[in-house]
Image (cartoon, rainbow, N blue to C red; front, top):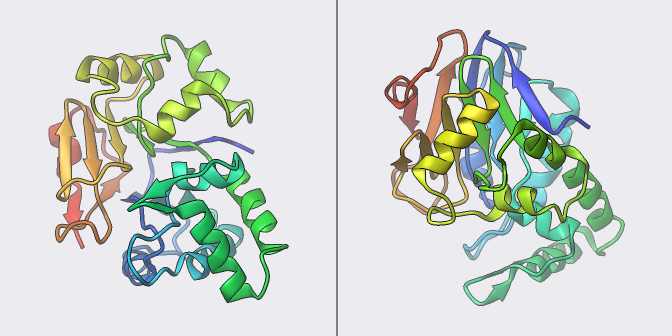
Length: 248
């Protein structure tokens, strides 16, 4: 499977981060997407699952995502650290709860048994790409970058389906402080992009870190932020990218 999606200088791209089992928000973002226009793309930047709210619709959300991934070439989902936790059988905690276990219990409740659904979900998670790179200058990932990417050879080593790769780990788990604005610029220079959009971190809507912007599209903020990018227009700076930032 292709772990990097490359989008040409044509159409538009809606960018949404970290839905975390909130089906109502998911539906609201889908309304912004013209699914019948093959040049109208939407990407959910990982962490579809594991709600911290009392009501978790991760199962319903994944079922719909699998269906749409099969039906539409312009519907994209990237791998997040919460999906990765199930691939690698790694416990992941939030609010003192093991969210991997909670998700497995949710499957049992909603499907009547854990298997074969869990295995089917994990196989789907393994098909998820890691990155989107647009021809007009934008790079999108769950988080990152990794300081260990010092060349294109380092970057391309991520695509060998080794889910224990430390560079991939950085692109799923890093937070500001694990890298600097200089690290962001160095990475963008290596891959030939100008700006970077990530999720993973909870911010009040958005936070700029040099040529990187973090956005929060979910219930953790009243300022739910997303991008609606014109792929036909070159983006050489954060100022140009910010023109496409919107609020739900």
